[in-house]
Image (cartoon, rainbow, N blue to C red; front, top):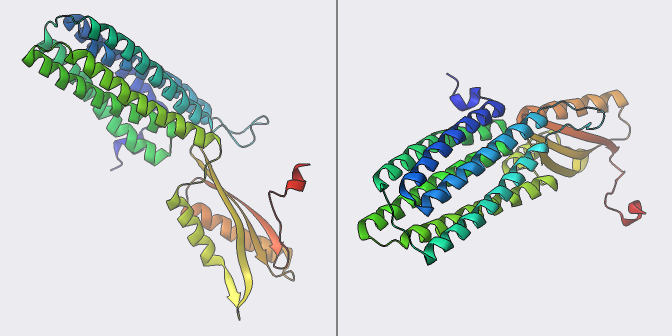
Length: 308
């Protein structure tokens, strides 16, 4: 039986994330209104960020799924990186707002009320976020979706945020130390700011054509090694200038395949087709570009003269 995260597309999961974000905003806002806790206010603010990120992520995943066209012949897969970067910026802005609110409360502590209801509502919202994040993270690995992974990791951060708030408020309730409430909120802000910075870094790496994952490169190298051939210490078929990159869900490899100059074009093209098929079978979603060259010819890249 196919697992849930394999059946659901990134678009559908992000649509579910929008609904869950609306529900958690309602629960956490009610918890803050009942208690007056700045810690719970910070938790509610992060849920608002979740909603904005889910909406933007849904839009970007929809754009990324569009087929190639005349203006974008390589497709729209990099749109997912904008979603991740936007979410990272939202998280950092939310963290700054939380710190500001917490400092105000730290200088002027306020009594907390109805913490039993507030904590119960916070736990309920965390259960919603945790269940959804668990499914989304597994789906992100199946679909290789950075937007889905970013939203899932943000939701997991929200779960840990809520857990910290609950522990801090429980201690404040038990000890009467009102300063614990804003201190917990500041700790929450620092934690989510770190996650926001990580998402921004991941987004930047993707936009700069980062190489494929080590396990994907290992699979590519294994396929090429299977086709490489020598006779009496002389290369008959060899590969070099292997370069990889990833763009959203897609993976790309460009390489040179060298073979004897006396081979016919038909024989060389047939071998290239076999290599391409083997690469795509080993790495689903891979796009391979293979340049054919005689064994005694080398093509060089990054020559400064080519830029003039």
